[in-house]
Length: 328
Length: 261
Ligand SMILES: Nc1ncnc2c1ncn2[C@@H]1O[C@H](COP(=O)(O)OP(=O)(O)OP(=O)(O)O)[C@@H](O)[C@H]1O
Ligand SMILES: [Mg+2]
Image 1 (cartoon, helix red, strand yellow):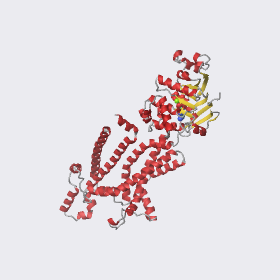
Image 2 (spheres, helix red, strand yellow):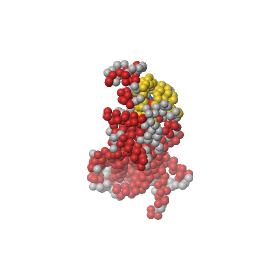
Image 3 (tube, protein in one colour):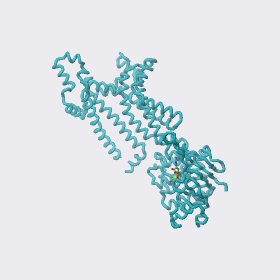
Image 4 (tube, helix red, strand yellow):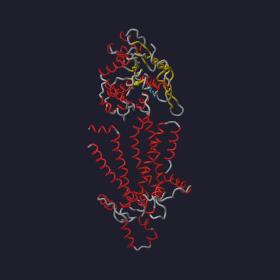
């Protein structure tokens, strides 16, 4: 037990260092960005009409003249105390903005994560088990096609088919236009989330399916499968293949969290879905440093948390780690 | 006596596709013949790469898909086709594989031996067969990585004899076993033969083979060069093929002379 505790503590320290690195990188990239926050947010014409004092106050608000090191350190100091600052664009605490956006995105992310994982696993196993036959070729071909299709293009395609031609699904946003927030039914929300979620799932499936297929093929080529056949065993797929594919599948599934979150940025943009990904784009383009750093750190923490969960689950699933830990 | 297994003029070849249209033909087994009679341990002796494991795999129809097999394999008087092999595997014919990587790393020993059956009869037989090879009931709950090499080897042997097969093909069953255990394992093969089974013992160790075998087939580069009663090796008289004579001379009690090998 102390073994696993030690492992977790070590991982958490690494996570802290990683978050520090990620936030610093995001900060430096943003700082180097040629976008002038005043021009993008206030507008060229409005700026020209302002008095120098007004401009100076705006510059102070957007932190234009504060040295970079000072700005980062003051953000970091606040972050360590749990205060991620106030979003410059939304004029609300960053944590509040992230909380609200995340709750809009979370359903989308979890649905896409679960669906792409389950579908990818099933297709990968099917392809691997029927390797060389037409099912395998069909699945592999489809996956290769999908993985070379950009997510935003797929999103546009689905929009055109389901929202423009067939008119069965809304064209964007999370709720119907003009409806009061509390009058929107759950069904309406689901209808709005469906296309983004499906797009996101589809783009995640191919990677998982192709990797799973390779694993299945490796396992099928192993000596123990040969032995199982030589012993006339039945249900080899269930007894031996699934068991041995479980671990790599677990890694794949948790590693795909990052891809899903990354994909959500583009997909939410196309569907004008007011989630975390869309907020990240606005923050980046609008020079909203506190919000961008907040989102970056939050998503990095989610991805890292996913990997940590995979590592801990490994200890539960893999007898070599489970028993090894028990022995020493 | 009618042999339980007979192999005649077996050949196994592989086609490898290289770059472009180039194709190479590998022919590791060219002409193998042997017989195993019920109640008998028949040994196959040959050096590394002479095609011994391929022979075993050919009998069980578990060769890789790019392998081509020609020749005659008969079991119990009838050709051992793929369908027939599939219905006999694990029941009447059983394989003791060469490596300990042939156990599923993610499955407990007991589950592997029982093959998914849970009835009390299977459980009892599983415990008994482990005990027969000096493995306690706690072995059932272990994963392969927790076994020593010798234990894993005994698990493979236990797995093969558990169903009371009529033909056992043992591919190098003794490496990793200490001398006493090795002799005991071979003794079990003899017992199984005395109970009426046929045992095909594949090994590179002529001396070890001679302790239990009734007949010895000598393989060289995918061909049978000799098929003799084991008794002939006692005196060393009447060993005609030069390779067989060289093998015999290389045995410790005959001066361990390795020239000409
Ligand atoms: N899948 C394969 N494709 C091509 N050649 C193969 C294949 N499997 C085995 N061979 C070749 O066949 C020959 C005989 O192999 P085999 O495994 O039967 O040897 P062996 O007599 O069992 O040797 P050892 O005592 O080392 O186990 C070797 O030269 C090997 O390279
Ligand atoms: Mg071999």
